[in-house]
Length: 254
Image 1: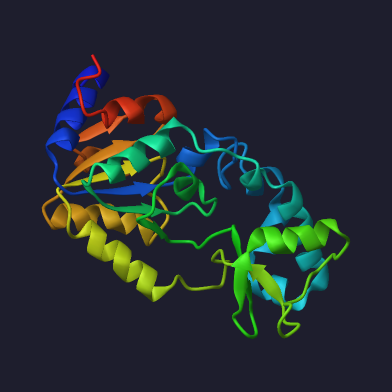
Image 2: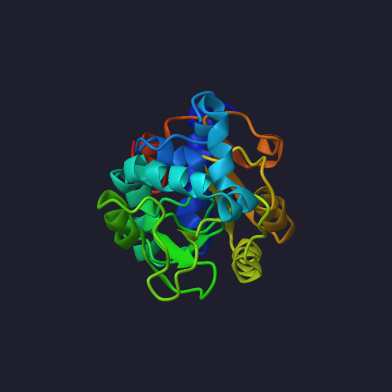
């Protein structure tokens, strides 16, 4: 199937669907200037030591790792990035009433900034902090203000415990309630649309075959091949921020 045929097939399926579940990955964010982790220019590819700040045991036991993590947050592109047209297209889809749920492996919060509200964050959020001891939580801006003011490793204001982002770290399990919500959304849709994900990291990658077993048709929008391409009803390789608004447009974009 050539690219134009794949696009038209996907557009028609999405236009006719009453319930669409979407899974997004790092490709959504790279268009907004946020690098991925494992790609050729990924954070861990360029600086393998960066993986230590994302490992729970290192973070909890080593103040130097925490200080490095807080410094990275102060210059992270996450907090200066803006949603792109693909984020806005998914927010428009939700407003149309046809979005079953938006599942994301991203932690940057750009979907919410674009206006999406029904977002299932598989890996947590970089935009909130949490105390490991008393579980108090708040917006990350609070802690970043303290770091910029000179605190290298800010402690919990309530109990003095270790503070971290609410993102899921290595050695840590995903929240079972979040997984249950994602599984429910994948099992109850007409079309399962994946955008900007290699579909190589589980359990997120397992949601597509789950949706298909439940009867959904699948559309894959990604720059590179995935192991599920041959199962999909349509595969599109155009730039995400350009193609997704056209793919989800209410009228014929041609």
